Length: 416
Image 1 (spheres, rainbow, N blue to C red):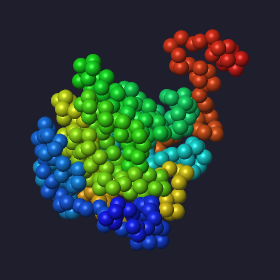
Image 2: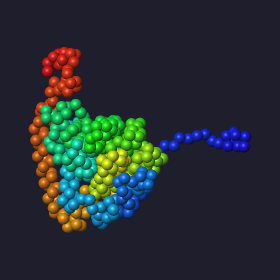
Image 3: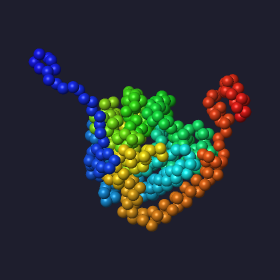
Image 4: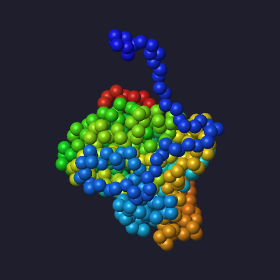
């Protein structure tokens, strides 16, 4: 600006549109993922002041080293048996995914979404919760059910929308719901879950209950207004909730930089609301559990919300309707610097002398047999194009406490 206040010779404005580091055909580039050494990040007291732990929103908490050792202040919370159980849960989820992906390609269901590479996030988090706590998940947290021993047959019946579908054909495949297992009905519009989760947590506090909530959202959906409204309510009323952001680098075909903008990290968004925020290696089962346990205890002690960003990678397609080769290099998954959560935990257990390659292969075979048996049972009740279907009568039930006259007439006209 010149001395007289005019704009002088300034050129026209231009719009900035973030671009991914590489496009299909290029070499994968994860130079933006700055990794701290495993065990290097401090573990603050649960009642730490948010202002005193701002640095945790910009680092990545890791427990497993490159050599598979558990190191640092976040380690040591799980026994070998608990870790073996966690490994089995992740392996079960991956096998379940593979079978259901094939079933979709065979036309037995219309739609499916994999968790490939993200298994540690939901499987580990579930083990840190208590009975009665409520998750408000996205469509990529089926590990919350697997790790809580929800019957796979019921999950598959929901996917097939058959006569045993517990949701009676009212939901898109993979959008499960189970009050008993703390799994709130999934919404395809992800950000709506977040604000409902905060409301549920506030209601629990108003009732002087002991149950907490966990909200889940993907990196892309943090650009929705409901995400920001949720943080306002959570921070203002100190709701007993853990606010989870699963940053798997891709929102359908849009890279995470579009939603992240200039904030540096997704976790950093919590800081502006006075919410303690942490980033964790989402492919490290031990780190996910430790950070989840810290945040859950904080909520349970009435200290308010915590925001957690899980840094992970969606190794598969966004869904069976997606082709990721159209927007990212085919070899990008192989270049992901945080590796495979199953292989990392497997190697850790082998290093501790409580697991082996032979036992791992045997377990893979046992899990496959279990999943295939569940699939056969589920398919005996019908699939998308064959066998039993939910009754048309079901669409009239469960809508109102007392069915109004116009619905009674419609049901009679439909003959159900």
